[in-house]
Length: 460
Ligand code: ATP
Image (cartoon, rainbow, N blue to C red):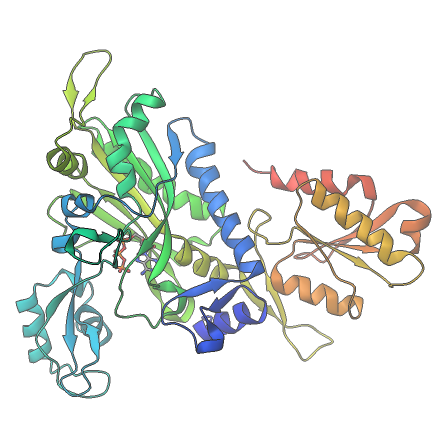
């Protein structure tokens, strides 16, 4: 049975993963905050991506670019002229909708975002598509997604600044500086985690589509002619990030090729993920971008951004293969992927277990004293503090029956629970229980961190 989005929304709220922004004021459309567990999970997901894309490789470096870039960057990139969706307006309520979404939701075609305004109007008329309120729609018009503000002493045209519409532009404009200062030769990649802002119009799918989000990107620079080989490599490597590193079920992932390409792209595929009852939707994009970005920025900046091959002295603009993933979408996919409800023999309530792999679990271990009295709470606290000082994010829970506490930790995906009992005081041992097998083992207190470390580094 497919998990409903509402189940995930409630789960995330109840356990402090995700809250609507400014909730006490009624929330703020398509903006979300991450609570203590959401923040830990988000960091772990980004760290997993970093391990896979940067740390495990010798041909990728990571940078961190500012949110503000020179406004010319957005001219050069085409965002000021062309970063737009086609919108239609309800002629009665004046609410606006993305035309491609209305066409897709009506089941008329997939990939309706490849239609021109004229084609969009035709499809809407021929199929008599109305607004969600049942009213006629206006003709389709472009709507720019860039979010702008003013930087400087005046508020006029000269001080307009844009918040990044996509995170990766810092990589393109800095590419040569990074290559030279890190003494890299082609092929090599630049990775980045960066904020992006889009004035999205269709925003009803929780953190799937937000107006502020983070992207984790790789831009891989290659010699012209080698881009197709590398494109295939990165498609495969990205897919394995989910199936081999994070342990996603391959049945929940599928590649989808873009039907109509933006003019500069040679090829573009998305990895779609099955977000439970929402069905398959875009998780990340992998694009064969040619030399469009380096060429545009060379032209607009007047700077020579060509690479000089140290062996042949040949000079050329590199081609770029891009992989781009939204952290919110990755986080949402991980909640769908690892959420489980199991029936328990002696209980009417389902056992909710978040089967996060160790690297993603917000808490790696929870310390549960059997009783608060007789020094058990103090001993538990000591174990907890010692683990935290070793960098292991542990939780401690003193409230309720031991069964209830196991349930709580299962629900938030803590892989290990340790109970502290009278034998702990006399023998220096604890019982360690695994979330998935529920098997219990008696080990020495000193061995806890080694036990966990063997998991962290088990596979890679
Ligand atoms: P969509 O078609 O869903 O609007 P896109 O094709 O415009 O997405 P890209 O510009 O290719 O997306 O961005 C790369 C990645 O960034 C996407 O695959 C997605 O994971 C993420 N992303 C894009 N827009 C959003 C958003 N509004 N909220 C959250 N993540 C986003």
